[in-house]
Image (cartoon, rainbow over all chains, first blue to last red; front, side):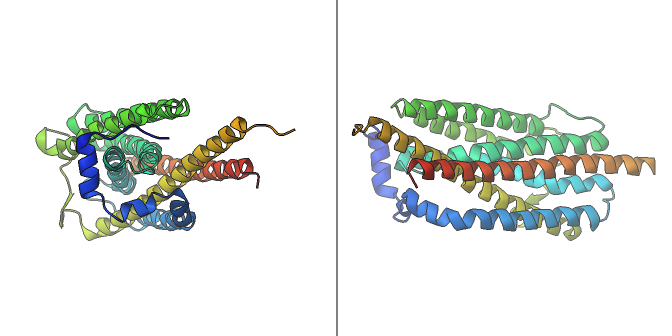
Length: 268
Length: 46
């Protein structure tokens, strides 16, 4: 798929700041060589760590003084929230790389991140709601944190629909849809700092941040399994993104091959 | 005691949703990847 000439700003940015090593991974064959062993490794280690941390949280962690037994839900809820936001941050970074440097794998990486990102955002909302019923006495409140997280889920749905339309658009010979999807990914990133700061900016039933840069208000009894769960789910997230990238690449290569076969003259 | 049991019900519901959903996501991503790569190899005539 060839695109039109880059704008002046993009061309200047591309020439001035293009990291030399970045385009080493632009070759799908080289990417696949790495992804073939990395995908099962991330999924396997992620499953072991996430499963172990959940079991630890379920069986070994004592009930919290205020939250009681429901504190165990946080080992699912907190990693899901982080990954929901990390997913959109990945989409935004990949969108910049696509728009500025025209990296051929950037749009595939962004599209591959959308479904797992939406899943973890939905899981964060669902587990938060399940936790909120015994803790707050309600399944849902329209406060800043919960509402901005719900907006993130709708942004994911919009992105998935737009990326699907862009794929059909690309099959029809136009590349404009991919750029529109990338711009949507970039604009939607404004919601990520809003989610992060919502408990500081507005009155909320949701607790303020317990873990900030270099500081934690959580006791080590809860913090250690929480960090292991976050690491395990992050590895799972990475493995799923790589598997989705391989799926999308294989679909593109199949379509290109079939199109070439259909266009080549039939020899009797 | 009753309150404690009720709290465990919420924990069980959250874990069932989280674990089944995550395993479902991983299985879906893995199997759809294998199918897509099989289709690509078939199209290449391997």
